[in-house]
Amino acid sequence: MKSYLENKTKVNATEFLNEFLERNADRIDGVKKLVSYYAERPGVEKLGKHGLFSQTDEKINLDEVADEVSNHNGIVWTHVISLKREDAERLGYNNANAWKSLIRRNALEIAKAHKIEPSDLQWYGAFHNTTHHPHIHLLVYSKLGQGYLTNNGIESMRSAFGNDIFRNEQYKLFEMQTEIRNKLKNEAKNVIDDLLENINSNVRVSDRMIELFQKLSEQLKSYNGRLMYGYLPKAIKETVNEIAGELAKDSNIKNLYAKWNKINREKLSLYYDNKKTDIPLEDNKEFRSIKNYILKSVSLISKTTPTSEINEATVKKSVSGIAKNLARLIANSCQQKRKKLLGQVDSKLKSKIEEKKLAHGLKTDRTINENEIENNEEQGYTISM
Image 1 (cartoon, rainbow, N blue to C red):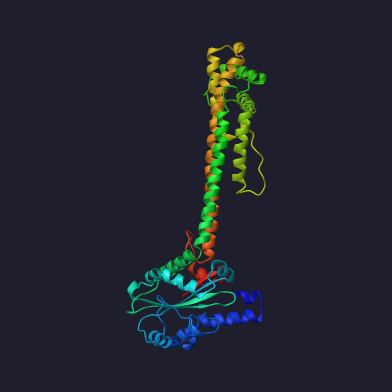
Image 2: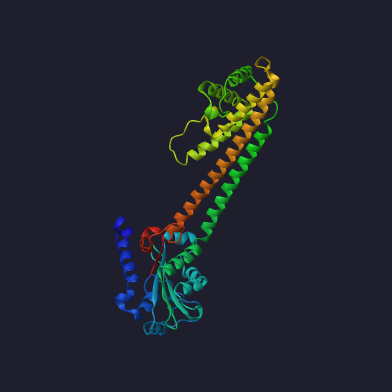
């Protein structure tokens, strides 16, 4: 119907009318004529004199099957399973043998879905190679007249057929998912490990850093409050911030923080269209704990060393420890962000897989409206009951 509405040609109109007749053949001509209709109508691919096939390759007599079906006392279920033409061509379901093998492989699932004992299951199928939606007609019933079909049974059949038909494509998606995850994981680990190894005792100590240590030492001597950054008066906070800013100038810290910003941008790009500006290290609340470490380090120095004697050697020893702790903070944050990012990559790929499954009528982790699935021609894979 969708193809005809989009392009009202004679070919599409004929396709639509034929499909309507096929899906309602049992109502129009009765169940007895249904078997011959499926097996002999124009477009059916014949496997010998007709197109009907079943679980074995034993010769099928159409008249006998027609009598058997029309005289059956139980329920006879009729299903139509179709693919879009491009999917049928790509996946090799453009011939009767492929469909016959599919149904035979899933006979136990069909029996289970219909609450029929496998030994009592009887089914017949026929492949119709129509223009837009190559499909098979499937008749299912119990030889003993038992069985029933629920919505869950329909979903289990849909899932079984879809997973079988699209198995190779799902494997490709999962392989891509694993490849991307491993690549990102290895890249992050190698870079961060290398940068951590380069944080050593040769941390640069500028004249400005020495001045700031002296200044903070003096400020702390007159401060009696709690030695936590959040409780400090503004003037002392500014000095601590400047020390953090000087630390950020170290080449190895700078490289490590650049890596952090790169990962953070990748994360933000999942949520924002506009690129966010990188946060200066000293203003980044995620590494605020390093400021408490700075406070404690300078506080220890001020208790043992007069301000006038705080020199390069004293500051260098303290800064080395602070830099290593800061590097570990950044590295740990990098790894955590990368882990979350990998989870988001996994989630995106999983969404693609679920969208593909949904498009082909498969059961997914999402809640799916069964009425939307059952006869939606846009999906490419349909099963009508």
